[in-house]
Length: 554
Image (cartoon, rainbow, N blue to C red):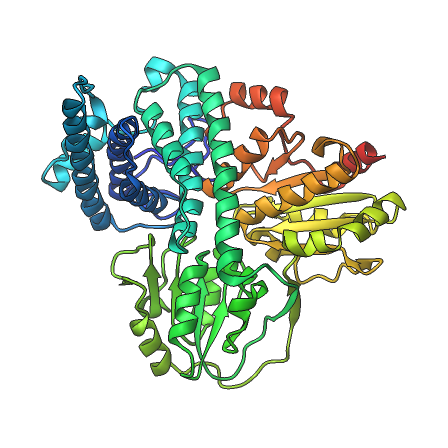
């Protein structure tokens, strides 16, 4: 195996990346290699899907399958090797179906069909041992000796951006939202990777194209969330336990949560959110369920502690799953793209097994004192008070905005983001999104003229909201976004974060500070290139970075 797609990957003087029998995330080499092989097969689907569009066909069902399959390969999503054996078979079936359709249409129109090679012709082996041999030809670093680490790194950045964007598109798809142009964008990008590209400038350009594609995806997901559940509204969320039977929902998928809420109505079961599900409490149609009682626990990396202490079943709807401990392994369930060997999986949105477990388990025996935090500062909320924000900036009451957002994680260095929030001057506003906010969202930051200093904008994909707010402020002040008194301190962990970073860079956002460590797939030469083009830099010390930001604002 070889993998360096997440922030926690092994870093050593001999080279970066997990290449042992088991990665830091807990993924074994069999699963890792099968994931690489499946992605190779997905490139074959994309090759034929792209060419079918030339005949006016829309292979949307194949695109849906690709989104799901790509999502399963994100860090901390699916660790079940047997599931990937099955997905590889399904990948070949889809590819052959599109291939036959393409060749038939070409013959009908008297056009010579392209004789595609590589993924377009690959046949999966019939045994696991055979698949593992084939996987050696699908490793992301396969041509390292031929093309060098810079090209391998650029290919990786592009692929990881594709994965992250696909995950967001899958969330939208679950709510019934899809876009044919977005599907075509994924096809074209995977088709491009199938050519083994070796030009650095071309690869960087394609990464920017994925950034733009992800911008469209996040806009679609924003429309899906607000269209399904209403625009975010300011709301207080209880972080304390409530007496009664209980189910804990983690991950990101609001569709799964909505289904569970509907299926548990009137059963006396309280539903709690966990991790990136916290923003669900800001959507009026979800909050309308009285048994959505609060949020339990914090960010994903603390789930061993959170899940062990929770006296009911846990439903994991997406990333980030870590190996379930014996203390709760028998009461955790997975859904959608998520999987762990031996853990019960929910199919088709029927949460009856989870509900049965909740009724059988004790739940909380008593109420705890309320502990409230405020959520719901999505773009509609913030834009609703934009005039007050603008006036406060013009009057000097607000001197700077700090966007402190992104993923949390267990690696050292993430206290930097807490320190930035705590040390930010009183005349500044903190925008936050993603699960990194758990490091400081329970702190009391006060307000500026009635405007809370801490504005929780939602999930990581709500970077779209932050972009809209920044664009509106730039328009109001007749300047560019880079001219605003705004600093971006981004914590990254996995491929959704890579997709968001590429989106920000593709929009021309400069001066982003990324941490706690920079991606291992970015070589020194690539970092220099991105630093020159976008002023992308690593996080430093909180005090110095705040000082630099305020100096620039002045």
